[in-house]
Length: 224
Image (cartoon, rainbow, N blue to C red; front, side, top):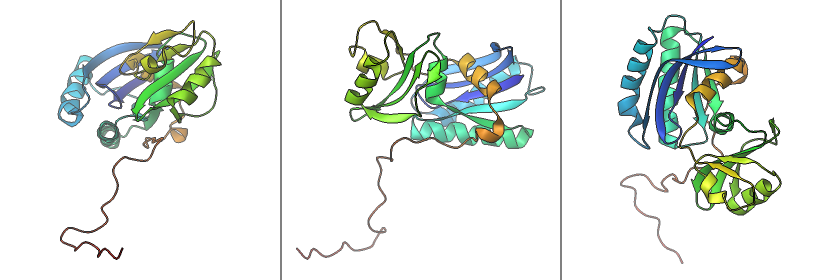
């Protein structure tokens, strides 16, 4: 299966074309640049170069895009670009969990995928011997540390891993800024497009709040 992957959720802007067979992903064309903003300016050029290196769009079976958790702006850029390509090419677009992709990026039996969510929290998902233990969650550092303590020998992966590196003994820390593109391709090949729509995954309400009055509208009188 030939898959075009797009990842703008975390600290990279990545576009790649992969051939996936028997669980092995082979890169045909790949472009990735570290960035936390500016994805909208670069994603088109990276896609053009990656697809050209892969020999064009011919044979692409599906498009995969990370849906979060991650940067609000980055996610929206990636999702819009992937859905636009899918509509233009007539190809299905599947959504990939950023945490699942991080977990699949390391070769380990027990894994804690952790993204720094700021404000004393991490976005997290845990696997024991390859089996997921519950859905993705937004956890306090204390709650995440308690979960990790119950996973002997677990690998901590993601931008939140250094925050919890001292939460137990016998821990390997992989603080990569984004998931492996090959892991994205492997996950995408195994998904049913009908069960993995490209819709954003938010584990916490946005920091921004809607305005309490319209522009030009007078402030409410203080009756206190």
